Image 1 (cartoon, helix red, strand yellow):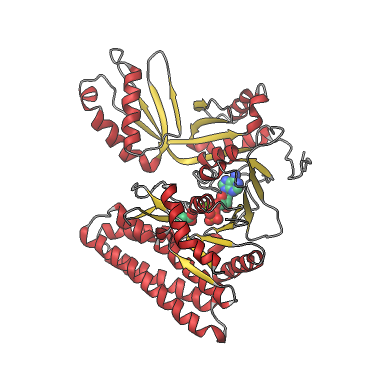
Image 2 (cartoon, rainbow, N blue to C red; image 1 turned 45 degrees about the vertical axis):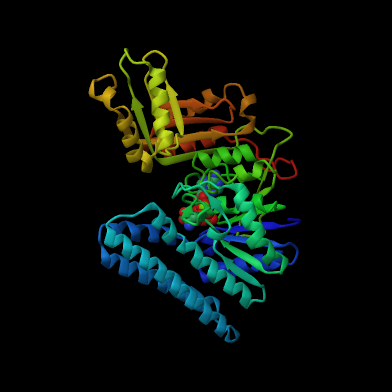
Length: 481
Ligand code: ADP
Ligand code: ASP
Ligand code: MG
């Protein structure tokens, strides 16, 4: 759609009535110039609360359900009171609180069902967890109406169509494009701003799904691609994409521009500022993305672009701590390659994502890094596929080391810098930190390393210091040296 802008507001940008007012201000300002679609996250911490409530419900802990449902209701009703506090907003306030009560009741009904069953069916979890985003979209859309912006809360289950991988679904684009044309375009043409829930979606036959934790970024990029948007702006709580996680490293610099590939590598290797799959739907159509700070609107933010004329060396250091290293060692009589193929096949079928893979040619042993949360499913998949080999000692017992972390150095221009890997390894070893695995993809965009968990943060700081490169501003001028 011509000139369409998609804006996504994250959990902290929706975290209170005050933050929602700021979001609405931003929307009202830009909505005068562009047709807008807004995508919202749940208020910060709400998704954690919903998931924890369902976990405890499965254990039959009914008192937690009661307490948490009350917390959920109170928080959203209080925010509603604060947002819609004008005398002229009484009717809107009543309608919004009715909508809030019925959404919280929906969550309570599903959670009680989980307690009764003693089981959390993934589909029910996806349906219930989407209540967080549905609540925040109701709050923001009613508030927009109250300040004179015509807006409508839209449940993404009606516009984003996915496969049936509950908890980590992938979009089916042709069906999503058709739904967007049917549900969103008429609203836009009527001058009504859709406030779409991030994170959730549904299968073609209407079963609720979600796109993985932090998935509202991905929702926004799916909609940007489906609607052929002009740009996507992702509003968060930091000044843009930085050379490292500002919570770990003090002297980070803001990256004024990064390429789609750099941003994707950063996100896949742990930079929480973007959901890992955000860039995929956009890169093909080259829709520019901005990462901006809703707490400081004057800052330009980071622009994600398709390419640089001149590559810029190391751009950022990222890390992940919630990972586990799985090691497999076959006996000499077994083909290591065949074992790898079977293991990878089993992991793929179980939807386990491999973050780093490394093998040694002599012993044919290999190891791979996965998310800690995937360990039970991965072990189950491997052990059930390799029962005989394990029973007869052709394969040593599978080892899992959770005391590790991933560190990655990312940058398009790294290809052209001889000796860079050596400098990175030296910086880590100066800190007396042991590197367990090293892996560099064929694109040479990323060097990934697995290190001991207790040295991870020190390693990030040491590598960041070692690799500090001049940052370049959006107009191509060096801004720090
Ligand atoms: P939102 O709720 O807006 O989606 P997130 O908490 O998911 O925000 O992501 C923003 C956070 O990502 C920041 O507060 C920051 O701590 C963290 N972060 C990690 N790595 C980076 C990085 N390289 N650049 C910017 N932020 C990062
Ligand atoms: N609310 C969801 C989460 O916390 C999605 C998001 O915020 O992007 O994971
Ligand atoms: Mg996020």
